[in-house]
Length: 502
Length: 117
Image (cartoon, rainbow over all chains, first blue to last red; front, side, top):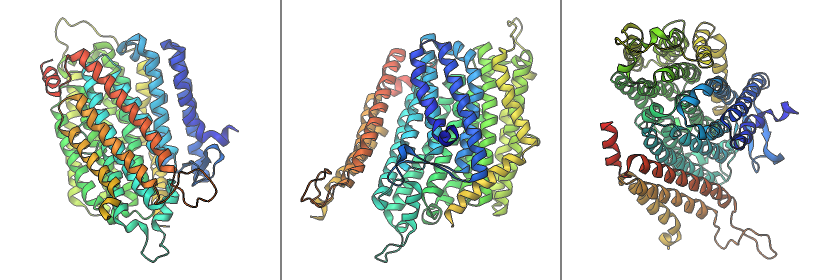
């Protein structure tokens, strides 16, 4: 019974527990409920990933209404992969959140915080499982609205303006998506993604050629693409991101950086591959010609700006924009190897950015701020946290034996297979820049001395250090035993491409 | 006639562009929200227009009526309206807190304060 409904339980469970958190009222109780819900989702997600690997695409009809009339949940390998990332990060972040939230958020808001975190979580998972274009919009907005609250819930007033700007741009992105879906619905008369793909590519009875070659569909794809670019923060639509990650509470930064952009990339893949049966975006629109240059410029500019940041969280935020650039390059190549590299980098980036933001959160817990000049020598007194930070940093640079290396190497191979020499060189250049900014953080934390007379600092509480270290070891694990993740992302990419060319 | 036949879509485009322009150009946070709202509302009009059929009746089955307007876009847009209301409410409440903390809702003045701090 659970196995049959697992695919919807993953989403519904956190959605139902969210109001429960508010009713429980007390921070500790809400935390307990939220942790249970997220861990159950994680368990279900692992179960579903296993099943998708064995049986192929899983389908579920909401309320027993058959598609295309009813809403269909449809989990393919790419969706299951992202679902596993999101739930895994959630499962790691929640134990960590207990101490961190108590330090960074006012007590009367704790229950609301966990409720919003669960709503955001449910929305993100909803995107991974849905097979319905409009349902995707609703899930996207559930997660986005919860995110705006999460960002602004801390004590830093700059988070308010950051959240407000995110709200404005996020809503524009979502509305663009809505317009795109409207155009597609007008042309196809269906909202089910697979049905859309079928109708778009079918020859019409009046002999006018398939619908996907009409201007309306092209306009729809353009709207969908630009709207999603806003959500994944692809350069130059990234302006909302740095302040959001920098001023949000540490837990929120870690959770968002590791999940939200990844799910938005999945939306992009759904638009390019699932909705559009023939991958027209790459034929009809100059997507490859715009996406790859934008992504590469974004990777370079963001890496360059990151070097000059004086705030660790802002620095990591800019690095996130650069990393999103790498993923976009892989997608823009429109080859199977590129797509697989993107998916792999998506997993690995979730792990490494999660590690880094969690480690920074540990430092915030003890020091109370993130400006580089205030952090001199702090790492020496927090050995476990700085171990995690160094591991995450090395992975971000892409040092061999870390997760970052594996996926960057895969990306380089994919780029070289298409003989884009310049792109490959620029990826390497941007990696060199990342040595500079990661090196700067490590230098300040570990090599500089504490100012004389500064109060001694303790290591962060065990329940914060432990999750951080778990993710940090994940970096090594996915770097050394990388075959499994690589194989899964290769299969996921193969499946997405196969949908395109049946 | 051609133009008048598409009047809904012209309204959609004009509203959308004016909303978007207001959203981009206004420096006052409340005006930005107004622009955003206009932008979203224009999309609602678009959706509702797509459901209309010439000579189509309301989608309630009655004898003697053959063609009905398509109710699905209307239902979709109900959901989108809820989403729009939620984001407007959230935006306005954020503005309230910004006003409390910064004492202003003009973007320039807020930015100036952040640079100083």
